[in-house]
Length: 351
Image (cartoon, rainbow, N blue to C red; front, side, top):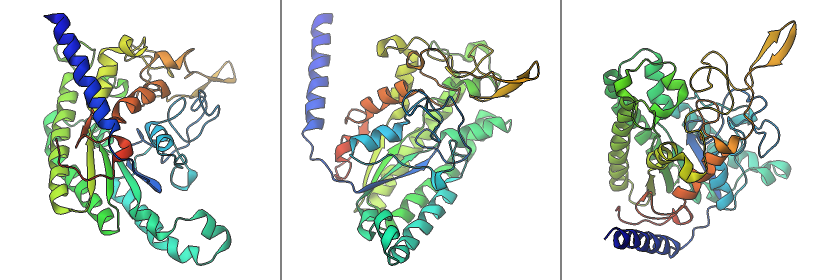
């Protein structure tokens, strides 16, 4: 009986993958990213050893190589995104400020292009904005900010509607500017991140079998349920938009709860850090130095093999983990409606 069930499961999985592959592909002219530093880098230079695995130098990304948005760009045949003004690695900038930056950029671009020469070559044409994919990854910074201000899980839950209301407004604003294609990631299991677990006290009874803090993950799941409801409302209010909701939470939690299945050895222990249960120091970030016997020495070093770690620095994932996440979400298996990333321009009924 078990063998038959196992065979049926893989038959269904294969059929799902074939159905995904059968979708028509889109030709996105560009990609614009909004949200947390899980997708990109926006503020604060990331020092060495950030970028050591792939770029071999710091590239304003808080990981050893590529972040999730890099893999998305590669798969769509688009260049890697640059952080705003090429300045950073961490994204504490609120969503409304990010939108204001985008608004200014999209409105000033046609005027700047009229100057010709280098401006015309580097800046996008007007039609690019309506043929671009708009990616969002929100929630992690919004939730953890509350915990770091000593708010309880109930207090953090109470302001989730405000965060989602802001998100809804931003998507509507982009739509009014001509944006039509949206790829929305839900938030991940923040209760599995060392920078949360080391800062906010929890009871032993609140730790789940994967070693994560259940109360914070429960709030994240509440956030995701609300996000999905908002996405459903947006589909009704923005009839020409193709909006795909992507369950990143489930993929990330799977990596952490079953690391060996994906080639990882360390589910929670960071690669770049030192000290404590998770090789994470709340007072020093990856690449931090200290004076030792009158000499500046790097104390927050990277591990020997980042590919064996899910977590890079206590906050962000390694390139190896980002690749695994991407390989899962690029198909339609974690999307609602069930479209692959390459077909995110299609308007289909939700699953």
